[in-house]
Length: 186
Image (cartoon, rainbow, N blue to C red; front, side, top):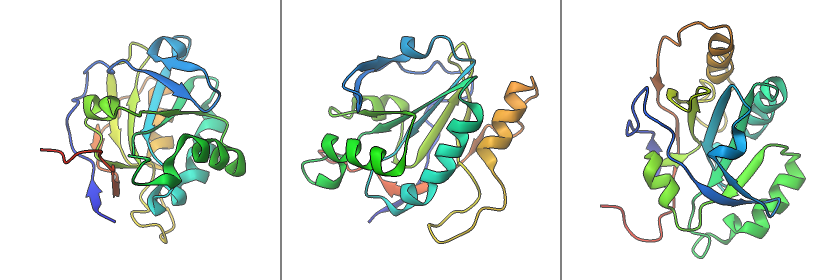
């Protein structure tokens, strides 16, 4: 396991890169699929990473609390040939077992992760209704799988955003396993 911290590639105010990806519901999803939401939370994640496993309940809670206004989308960009736990079939299985109600999409070509600049799992990006980046970073302050969160960073930022308040810190790096690339990144 290679541990990485998220990096700034997209900057605050940048447009969300578009995507057209298959979801575990066998439908194709794109930015336009979420046009009615006030915000969009894109989380690069996978099935096998202990950092993601530790955040699933927190992600589900975000979805449950904010789904009227915020679309939550998980994207798995890992190489499933080398990491079969992250295969499409296992994505469906894990989502069912964990009761994940948000969209979970597969980025087989890994180009979406590259356009977003995602490097680790989880790596969350929060966009406003115009799909401009307003926050990139952690879900909470528990920075290892065994830690207990004392601050719900993403929920706090979502509340500020929905109240029309400024998010003070627009980048607060997440930490997790590296995305498993099909070829070495340069």
